[in-house]
Amino acid sequence: MLLPLSNEGAGPAPPPLEVARIFVEEAAAAHPRGRAILERFPEAERVPVASHWNIPALHGDTDAVDAWVRNKRTVLVLGIKKGLACRPNGRSADFIAPSHSNGCAMACAYCYVSRRKGYANPITTFVNIEAIAASIDRHARRLGPKAEANQVDPSCWVYDIGENGDCSVDALISENLRDLTALFRRLPGAKGSFATKYVNRDLLSYDPAGRMRIRFSLMPARLARLLDVRASPVSDRIAAVADFVRAGWEVHLNFSPVVVYEGWTADYAELFRQVDAALDGPARAQLAAEVIFLTHNEALHEVNLRWHPRAEDVLWTPRWQEAKVSGNGAVNLRYRAAAKARMIAVFRDLLARDLPYCRIRYAF
Image (cartoon, rainbow, N blue to C red; front, side, top):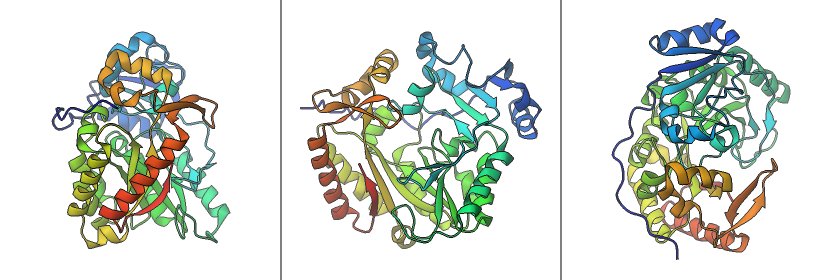
């Protein structure tokens, strides 16, 4: 039997950014977008670095775990994005676009990005947005029209622009997201997409004209209070759905990660009822979801025990989990295959009962 969760938790999320130190590559500091970001945070200390990937004060320093949340809140890295290829995906999107950022100001306890880049992974913003946008533009135009509908989208090629970060928070730093929104608005047959746990209502003015898909990540509120550290409250995310649809965004739900614990089915049923009560007709008509059950990692487990051990009460459940090698060669923990199949079936049944109009694009 898994441990029950406490209903206790923090109140509204604190401001996501209080930038006090900026690590900056020389070329990024000279770039117009880089200069604009530096001007936005004039009081911040500037630390020149040769590479945004190689910062000993941030990456691979085991002592940095003790400053996990502080670094995410107060540190920013500016760099130049060098790899500009679009990669095939097939789940959340048709393709993964070149990242315009890496890392996040939030500190979700299950985040895979943190374990990829070291013990502290604040936001890295890539300032050469024109090169990133040009790469997406060339790729989409070479593809031409989408000939066949798939589970990603019936008519558009969809590019995930937020694989390694949260674009809603990135928009507090620079105009990168606004520029990409403008790109997809004018790019025939293509659409941008990103998942978010932060409600940034400035995005309501972006005029995406239906060519940007924002995926609000949801989980039961008492679970989010434990795991989604520094993210917007789940109630705020739910309340934003209809507003974003009215502002021209396509809005999907991202049930990720689905975490199994004592009482999880009752909590998810209540979550679905809360969503249903908040949506109007237009929001319901376009709604779809992706469902991703928890993947954990032993190294991240060890890190979490140092800064947020209560999270591991529900994330680290070896009796329910088994090791599995991911596509990138990493050894992770996932729910045992037979049990997970039953869990997915239960989730589908609950969603069909309480949100019957919400199409599941994929579940695993």
